[in-house]
Length: 121
Image 1 (cartoon, helix red, strand yellow):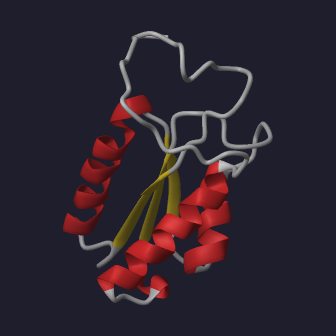
Image 2 (tube, rainbow, N blue to C red):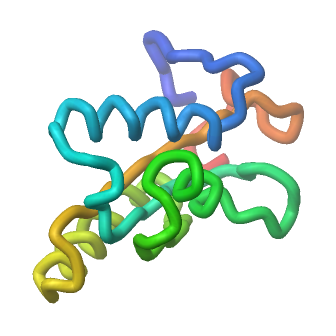
């Protein structure tokens, strides 16, 4: 078992609804206009909605508008570190001045028992 001491529970809120909340707070704290974002990387490890649906475009539409490159990064638990490397390389190439990396998941589904699964489950 993972021996978790505690965990945040989002209830029925889908991950793509949690992401804009976190992203808005990050943009406000950074004191940037969301429209300054040139790259949006959305990191997830679990099912995000209907099959074929693209959560990064949902976040793009509701937070930064239609101009930045929006990419979903699905690399499991290492996703945010991978996205950080991608974002840094993108910014170094001077393709954009600002990147927004957002991660969201909600494992509240009968497809997985998040409280009793073991390592590698």
